[in-house]
Amino acid sequence: MTLNDPLANVLSFMNNYEKLGKKEVETKNNSKVIRAVLKIMQDEGFIGGHEEIEDGKGNILKINLIGSLNKCGVIKPRFRIQVKDYEKYEKRFLPAMNFGVLIVSTNKGLMTNKEAKEKQLGGTLISYVY
Image (cartoon, rainbow, N blue to C red):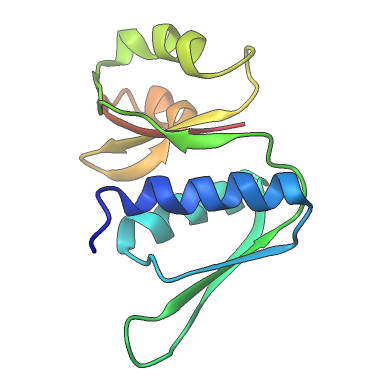
């Protein structure tokens, strides 16, 4: 059976394991987009890190949780966003001003909403983290 949205699956696992108080998540879902989102979450201080473990089939992704993740999830449908619309979507998906980040796919790669605003780039909303 195939998954419709592997990124949503990984973020859901992370939410559930964080609520249970676990310190790490292991998942078979592994792609460039998932690794890029995890890298942004690590840079922003929401997770401790992640690593790939080779198993000969598709590599296992091991994610270290540090207890600072309140909630994360994907944004469906994937809204197209312009520079002037960031504030509207921040109000919709984040609980407070300057609390959490939106992850945006731009033509310069995945980045946070803060970086995209500084660089004056629009794009597609991928996920939120706070």
